[in-house]
Image 1 (cartoon, rainbow, N blue to C red):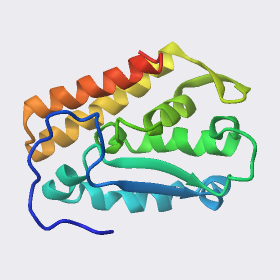
Image 2 (cartoon, one colour):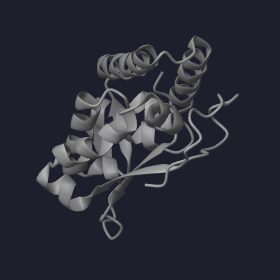
Image 3 (cartoon, helix red, strand yellow):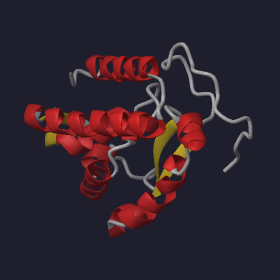
Image 4 (cartoon, rainbow, N blue to C red):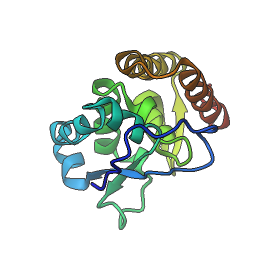
Length: 173
């Protein structure tokens, strides 16, 4: 992983237009099929290890699943993918802090964690009660890291607004 050694980057004015320090959380097909969440979680620890690291990678992470390119199903239609991603959401509340608000990472995670019925072709019926629980968990993780590291309240509000906009656009809020 390449890192900048410039300390804490200056706050971004708008979290949505792009990703400046892209980070890919790559989950392999093997990890999905074996339900190996421990190896995924171990790779995530480094991002919240220090104040500087957390700030640098805030809103920069993309969730990528590798090994299903030849599978015609959407990831939400693959039971082992749904199961592992739902567990990721349950055991790692910091997704709302680290996942970017540009690609489909947040939508994929929420579809797997709060989906009620999966109809194929990527069609998911969401469970409103479960959406509320998942969002509470994500906003809780977001708040925890802002409090732990003393990040500016204005940035917390901006990131929260951006997350809410992503959810509104996806029809999840």
